[in-house]
Image (cartoon, rainbow, N blue to C red; front, side, top):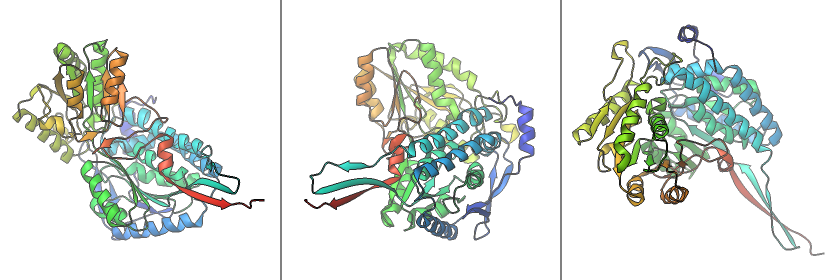
Length: 500
C-alpha cells in the first residue's frame, strides 16, 4: 500500500514520459508506415503520448522475428528451470517498477490508482510467478502398453502466439496471456488495446532486461482492424489468445479458420447474473458486495454482476441497501487514492453507457440512482453508480453488455424462475448464488450455464482456478494449470521394443 497522496501522484505523473513505440526484436521502433495515434487521459481528455500505429507490415516483421526466435531454441528449447528463472526476474522487475506501471494504467484508462497499484499490479506479478513456478513441475506421461512397446506423451510449445488484450485491466490481462504462453516456451506477440497500450509497451523493455531473448516477446500497439486482423490472418501465427467483446471474438475466430486453422482462446462478453435468495443471510453484506460487483473498475469488468436477480420477498429491502452503498462509489480523479471509481475509458465508451441508460428508460425500467454523466466541466469522462429496477429479461438492459456502472435489478419467485432468467442470455461468463441453504446453493450452481459460479461471494478465486466462460462468452481459460496446458500441444511417441 503506497503512502502517496493525490498531490504526490500528480507530481509523479507530470514527470512521466511514456514510451509509445512498438517493441520488435528486442528494441523500440516506430511503425513501418510512420503512423502514430494519441492515447488520451480520460480524466481530462488531454493526450498522454503518441503511440506507434502498427499495421500489416509490422505484423509481418514481428511474426518473422518470432518464428525465427522460436526455431532458434534459446527459449523454446531452454530447460523449464531456465524459463522459470527469467520469468521470476521479470516479476521482480515489475515490483521494482510498480508505481510507474500502475501510474501508466491509471493515466491511460482511468482506473483508480489504488486499484492499479494494490490490485492489478500484484495480480500481474502473481500470475508471472505462479506460471514460472509451475512450468518445471508439469510432467509428461507414459502410456500403459504391453512389453513390446513404449508410449510417451509429451507437451511441446505451440510456436508463435498472438495475444490481443483489452483496455480495462491492461497489465493484468496482458500477464494472464503472456505468462503461461512464455512459460510453455512460446514466442509471443502482444497487441494491447489502442485505448491503453502504455503499460504493455513498458513491460516489453522489462522483459528484455530480465533476460528474455530478442523476438520472444514483442509488442505491437495499434488498432484491431489493422494489426489485430493481420495477426489473426497470418499463417505463421499458431494461436490467438483474446479478451474482449463477443463481436470481435467472432471475427477473430473466423479469421483463424480462413487462415491456418490456428488455435483460438476467446474470453468474450458477459451479462452475469448475481442471484440473491430470501435466505441469503446478512443483507447488508450482500448489498455491499452486490454494489462492488457492478461498480468496481467503473463497471468496466467482463464478469461484472450487472444483472441482480432478487427474490421478490426481499427485493425492495435489498435495493434500498444497495442504493445506500452505491452512493459511496461516486467517481473521482483516478490519481486520488480516495477515489472508489475513476473515469470511463473514453468518450465513445461514455456515450455508449448513456445510450444504454436512455434505452432502459424508454423501455420502462425505473431509474433509482444516477443515470447522467458527472464532473463534466473538467473535460473528463465520468459516470456515477446507476441503478435500475423493474427490469425484465426482455429489455435491452438485461441482455446487452453495458460495460459501465449500471445495475439492472430483476425480481423472481423461486429457484426455477431464477435459473430460467439467469440462463436466458447469450452469455455465460460468471454468476453468483447467495443463500444459506447448501443444497439450494449447489443445485442452483449446477443448473447455471456459466463458466464460473460464486457462492456467497462475488468474483472470488485466485491463480489456482480457471477463468473463462461458455456460450457466447467464449472458450478457453485463463489462470491455473488448465491455461498453461492450452499453450502447449500433445505429442505421442510410440517406440517399438524388441520382444527379447
